[in-house]
Image (cartoon, rainbow, N blue to C red):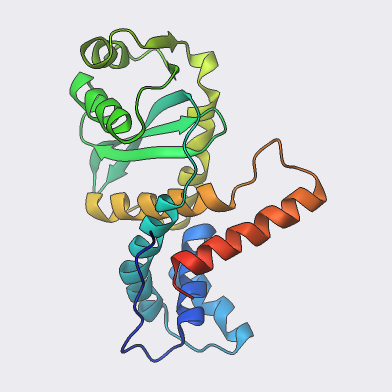
Length: 230
């Protein structure tokens, strides 16, 4: 069941606050760009206020969206991408299913077996064992799989893992838009909100007709409103 999002002691109506949060987490927009867009709807609010709204409400809405998310597919694609934060290198580990739905994003300081085990153990705890995992050639995945679920089918080939690689592209666009992230905690919070929103609004390759796209967007907006308690 979704948790109620409370907008008490806020001057603006819940619908306006939720709309500003949606613009920021759904599209590659900076806080100042969201500030520029809102006056067209008669909303005069500073980018700093929008930042506070995102920090407070986006995690709550994302949790509610994840509670409504359908069960994942049975083939998981795992991948990792390097991220630099304040001159220090981190790794953003990611798992998506065969439909491109993001299952998990974890920021870790290492690209080793221990990091791969943390990702895989968390996924299995939440969703159970999949039919198969697909990864690139990083040996840490195989070592982690042997210790956690030795009977799990594992295919390791860079050409097979385009699902995970392509899933990194929206994040890279966002990273360029905000000119990098300031802290590991800030990045982890953002990717959690971004992935939950993207999962709900992204259209599957099998739903590309105009009428299916229209209905999908209506369903997505209804889910967002419910998650935001609008």
